[in-house]
Length: 287
Image (cartoon, rainbow, N blue to C red; front, side):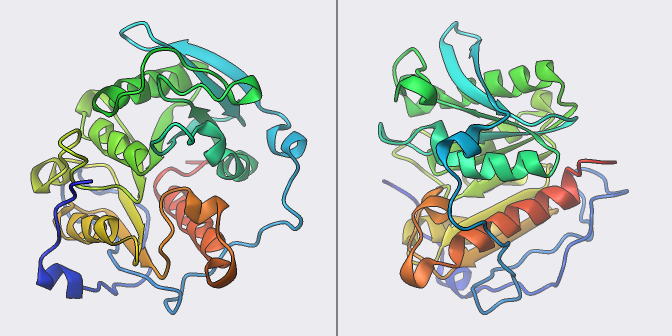
């Protein structure tokens, strides 16, 4: 992993501008009333309550349906659709053959319960099988953004009028690449543990980040150091609206939602709350 390090000044920066308001009346690329800040569990970020015990697989997938759609280069992708409505969210999983769309299913269920139409999917070459799906092609980071473009188009065809994209790790990087594409008309973008430079596959330096006019949310763990450094840089570089949070954890990507325990037990609730609050401000279910 070749993520560029932040400067000493960036490591020391902390933004405390208070709560954010919606992006009403703002012009793309111009400052708005949005806040930028770095948060830890000592900041006023309340975790959202989670049901206990955790939902069973049947409960998690109730009301969802398996879907299939092709990319522009005719690679068949597998996904799962949750919920209904005009406000849509595409969730892209992190890298590695052990990661797949199911890493996002808990969050997808929560979002669908709030009125969003949500699509998870397996990147090309990811084939966990059975109910988790099986996408064709070969796994390759440099073209994963094509899979996301196909997912965004599919979600719009299904009825979404406004689409936000969210991703973890390499899925976050693909989300930022697609958010920079003006023809995709992305309503908002969320990065969990994205990185500036993944071995030359994605290079998300100052220029690309500044060109993203959509509202942006950057979240990373303080002890997931390379990715925390990237988040700090992006918070400084991004054009408002932008929100940023560095959390007191070493967990990476969707592990912040699915693998937390012990000292990290509050992290999933905090991350869910950040995502729900951000989408509520910038991609509300009801306009």
